[in-house]
Image 1 (tube, helix red, strand yellow):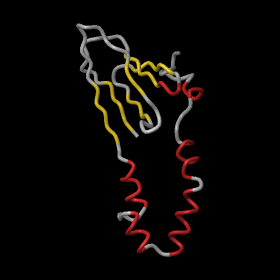
Image 2 (tube, helix red, strand yellow):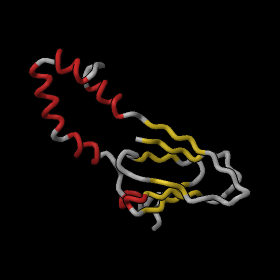
Image 3 (tube, one colour):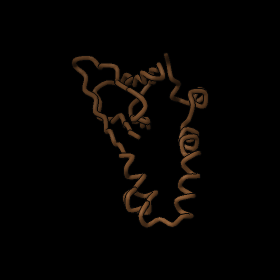
Image 4 (cartoon, one colour):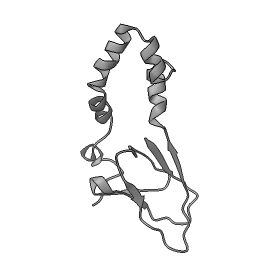
Length: 122
């Protein structure tokens, strides 16, 4: 997961645009906006700005391995397999069958933003 923030330290008043290639979307990305992108599954880029303009952004990301480390009780997969109880391992297997659906359900949809300020344009 990557977090992109368009800083107010910009010499242009025009909104920036982010392209999500896999979704065929161009999203208005105004000053001060922050957007979360599942960067492991979506390719993205920005539209270029004019030669005399400057734009600054702040990008953060979280490595997926950190989430596994926490899920394993702050230990590696190998250590969890060696020390986890039978019940813990069964629960982990059960969670794995629904993890993808739960993760995807947490994302907003284009339709949920149509009435808001950040209306995607194609």
